[in-house]
Length: 164
Image 1 (cartoon, rainbow, N blue to C red):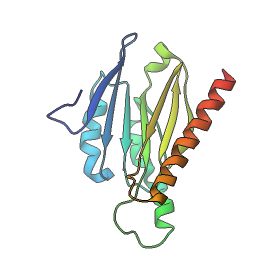
Image 2 (image 1 turned 45 degrees about the vertical axis):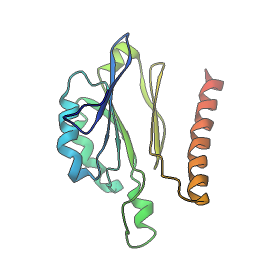
Image 3 (image 1 turned 45 degrees about the horizontal axis):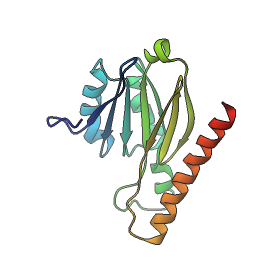
């Protein structure tokens, strides 16, 4: 359900117990931090998916302010982008999942299964959360990148099925 007053989406994905998920594209940490704080203060939010924080690895500590109430799983996409030379345009990727710590009591253990520049996979009890940053496809190279992302996620899913 889209919220007309805010630039994030809030979904109720389960009826027992209530699980409300918000997803928000930060368009840069400095641009989106106030809205992210507002989302995380909503006591009905179970998890938050973020995209495009544009933080480097050493700046991810800016998310520590949320660690009182949330487990934060994420990775920077900036390091590899900056490693290629001068930054041109906006970096692609950089996703995270914030999971409310209160869910451990009702749903079970919270674990990060995989964390990559363009996706994060977290298990919350029997629930699997996957936040994916999907690039636009404008060329064969972009399509190859998209296929690789889906292949990597599929590999983790198959491993989980084998383990269970």
